[in-house]
Image 1 (cartoon, one colour):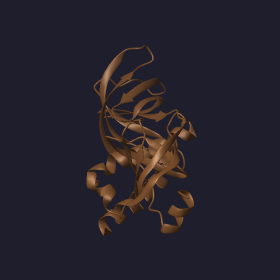
Image 2: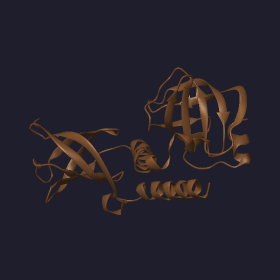
Image 3: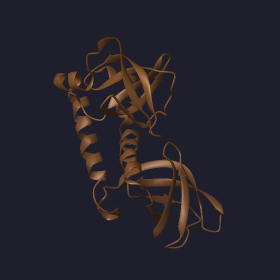
Image 4: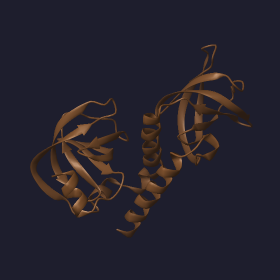
Length: 209
């Protein structure tokens, strides 16, 4: 329980740090993900992300573009990003993302989940007592802004199980009821969610009446 609470606190702190300021003020975190990028002349090359923040990423590649060049990169688990090369490094380049505030918020959650996911095995979502909800209905807002009517199967301070035929990608940011969460797993009846912060009993009653 203590380790779980500590990890949650670290996730909240790091997510707040990721969302503040310009590229150099963003906290850069090591994150190794394979990917590809396309240069301005539409030539494509393989690459690997070395570290990232919501403002940009450092990329390892043998085919570095030029400073100021526009690139489009795609990384596993995170998807595609358009940006501008900020500097050339000894093993590749760093580029600044061109993203909306909404995508920055989603990206902060995705980065935190990817960095901490090994600390949260499948049982972690059950570290807090689950409360049966008797088929109570609520809403689920997915990344595209679509709102779905879903069944609240069970609930705890750290997450919920949702009954729905929808399968948002694991690691994606959603809003269930009034609470932001990350999709942690898919199961036979729907999805398992992890809240971005622990909820008190009072908060649970307010957000899931």
